[in-house]
Image (cartoon, rainbow, N blue to C red; front, side):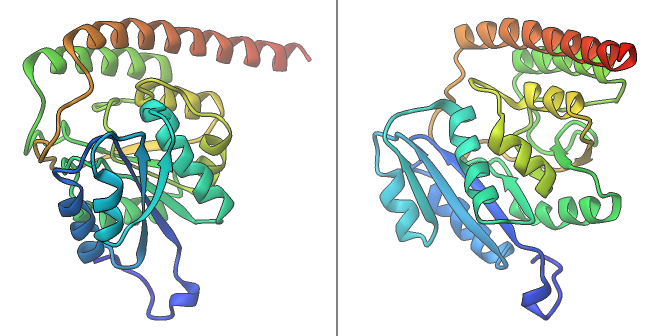
Length: 250
């Protein structure tokens, strides 16, 4: 349960964004967990053009649902959630996967860290304490590579750059509602925050294996993802450097 004041009128407003594509098998469990463990948060499922009964099941479980008419991918689905959060003036928005990997009970700690540090985004990392489900061997190699690259580019140690469990402040919500990477955007979103001089930090969380459905990231897509993200973050770093140079020259 979230730590919130008894006077709900003065409580921070929290939106849980659940991007979902063909998650009919596990979405009820995710929503029930959220309603039990985060009763003061609003739950919004972004049904990303699912071809199964994800939307119907999510509504039946008590979540609000936005049905996208076609599959936009994780970036478009998540940005839809951030746009909703910005338009409805939420104080905080948190991404939680629809496959049951993320534990809603960790949200209390994410919120506590954000309130104490006033950082713009808090990321739940499975690799700080290395407890719970980690990843497959092949994916862990790719994650380690991205972690090393991003840590060097930002000057900040990052252990889990692909984690989709992340809590955003109102400043980050406003940025992501306006500008958000497509495809598999978690790594690029960190660089976007860095380029816009917004802050982020990680805290340890314990993740589960997905509770249903099938991952959309195949072996071939993983190679494409790695190549695209590496090129993208290097370009973003170059743009950041040029922006600083132009500011100094002016």
